[in-house]
Image (tube, rainbow, N blue to C red; front, side, top):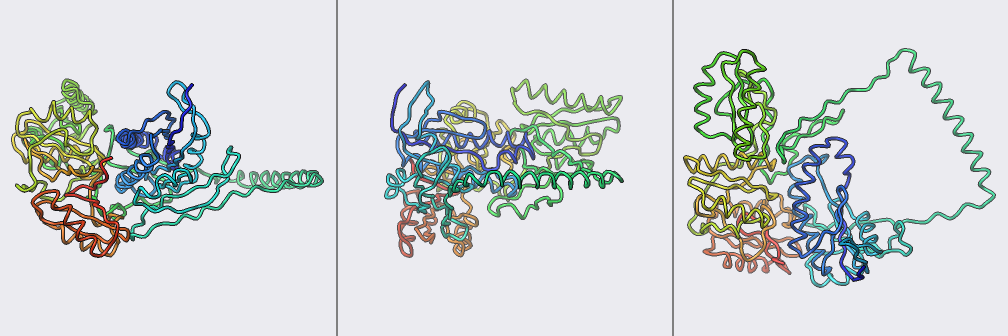
Amino acid sequence: MKRKIAAIFAADIAGYSRLVAEDEEETLRRLASYRSVVDDFIAKANGRIFNTAGDAVLAEFPSAVDAVRCAIDIQESLRTRNMAYPPSRQMSFRIGITIGDVVERDGDLLGDGVNIAARLEGLAEVGGICISRAVHEQVANKLSVQFADIGAQEVKNIPTPVHAYMVAMRREDGTYATPQIKKVAKAAPAPNWMWPLVVGVVSVVAIGVSGFLYFTKLETSKDGSSSVAAVPSPVVTASPSPTPTTAMKAPMPMPTPTQSAAAAATPSPPAASGGKFSADSVPFISDRARGFLSNEYAASNDYKAYALNIAGFSGTGLNQPSEEAARNMALDQCQKRADAAQSPRRCELYAVGNSVVYTHGKPPMPPQPWLRHDATTEHPFASKDFPMVRDATKVRLENMFAPAAKSRAVALGPGGQYFMTLGAPSVDEATRRSLESCGALAGVACMVVAVDDNFVVPIPTLLRVTGFFHAASNSSIVADARDDVVRKLGDAMGWNAVAVGTSGRPGLGLKAADEQTAVNAALADCVKHDSDCHVIAIGPFTVGPTN
């Protein structure tokens, strides 16, 4: 065993048991997706995950600054991802961080440092970060964030109170929240003479309650009117990151699209089963396959079915002796094609006869135009510069996308999801298909990042890309300035950058010839009406420190 001092990071999901109870499969899929984001940020911040259990993550960092900066990046990134879901289905982490003496055994860490980090995580607000005084002393003058002192907190199984601070997360209106956490007060022990009295009172109450329940049961059982409402199971897609669905739970109404974040394109509502089949509405497939559906499939009057998956593979069953035979033939043909191409996506029935049975609806798509060429910002594709993905994905892009035949396109989602379409007949088709499939994976609209040999959006290199930038909902910008930022960015071509200071007043660098000029202009504009300015966005991306 080896003893050392380390910054310990503890995180878990608030309300995880409820999320699992409402929709286990969807929650587990999203947990895997969110964990990939968390793991990626920890690795980039030089951290090491030493233990996991269910939704919990324990990691060590070489410094408190690295740990807190990583926690902030994680919470900001996951908050953006949560915008795609109604409040009842959002998956938010609590994070606690301390510096402590720990013992390393077989790669795991043990000791008070780990226990205190876990207790601090329990004090954190949903989507928030709670740190110990030791961590605060290390980071207070090194990170441009604010802290709220919540004093000494008495926590379970820790003999002495832990002095804690909250990282004050910025509200939507640009102000900072100041958490008010009550200290846990220890109750004074009851005098010995009171115990007989307490036992007697409890016994009398128990007898009274039992009698009431007994007679209540007799009354309700006379007419058999007591009933339990059956709750139907939610629809679950086979893809790893489906368009979000919400478990039905009476009497709560289903959320409307307007309740989603205004920043992202609103996902299309699912098409109702039994809708009339139209070849023009089928997602993911090539234009050639769409032509087949418009002609051969539409003309067939016998038992028929059509199956597809989000990677664009499809299968058809025509002129079959029964509906079941048509279904089986379409699914079997589609799955064989997908398996031959080593696609991990499962095929599903889209249509039976002339009726749509596909329940996931159209994938969310961004507004058109999907692609705008700008010679100022376009530059040759390089997989090492591809934003928001892991190194393994960059290797895959280098080996598959870069050498593939034209036309090809790759779309990126706000949580790091991506999808590439290779060897399409046209750029338009490659663009459409990559956006549709990526949207189905992400559950929100994606963005085309590269087409053929070029990046077609500005790719920041001066700062690290952390997500998609939506000025209308960005909490770093004071609320009354967001519309002005949206208007000024508008159709501004070239390199654009946004900076903010401590009060959230934005500075803009617009239509610059290069990234550095845009950044300098944004900072110069920001310091005119704010202090401690830093860049939060370059082009279509939010950005943060490189280390």
